[in-house]
Length: 335
Image (cartoon, rainbow, N blue to C red; front, side, top):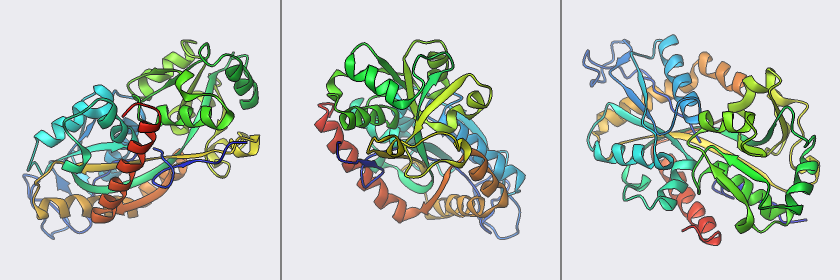
């Protein structure tokens, strides 16, 4: 049995989350202030660097709704700017130097894509605001798949690794790429022989899985819950240490005899060079959102694990993740 790998700083894994809220910090009418009159912050914008329907998009829109419902911020605009595994959005964020109203939803996928896409913009150039959540990955198949268990799939995959296509909602270097590569290595398949098909977010991956364009998908389990409940998709295994409450009957890889744990994360960063006042507004907003009952209900509903850290602590985490991802990609010959 291969050695267990854990992805997430200590191993490598990875999307995140995005939220905005004002913890006593409020905005002037133009959205730029940080007064103490208790009014909601206005004028905030969240960029999602991939297509609608994926994990980043879901997290950002959930966060924005919580901010609205909890009266932490109003008029929060969420918009999509997909491309190159998130690095088009990353470049836009870096180019928006000093813009204290803008933030970008991101996670492990953007970390990896910055290497594999050879992006001139890097996360080290951004202003870290907060890490919000962690989420286990899932191995999924369409309802009519011949693979009934994870071990059925692994047996067929080992027999014909190049003929079994796996889809992921991230570019090479992202969590949906790193997960099947780590899984392949764990079960004895050379990762260089994996037939990986990249999609720009879970919104594009889902129809590929449903339409049989790939034999199985690897992504965050939260992106498939609606389809699982509708009976369109089956989850063969989750990558968490313990079973997931939202998928109580689904085994973990470990319980199926595969010694791998993989955790993804999501967070939010701002452009470089924003003022300390603007940074404080964002962190206060995120903190208050994190403390709200509405956000706690969303964590439970979506099976997300609370992983909230802000500012410099999140910056340290990003630096560690950057190195860990770079090391894995070098092993795979991708960086």
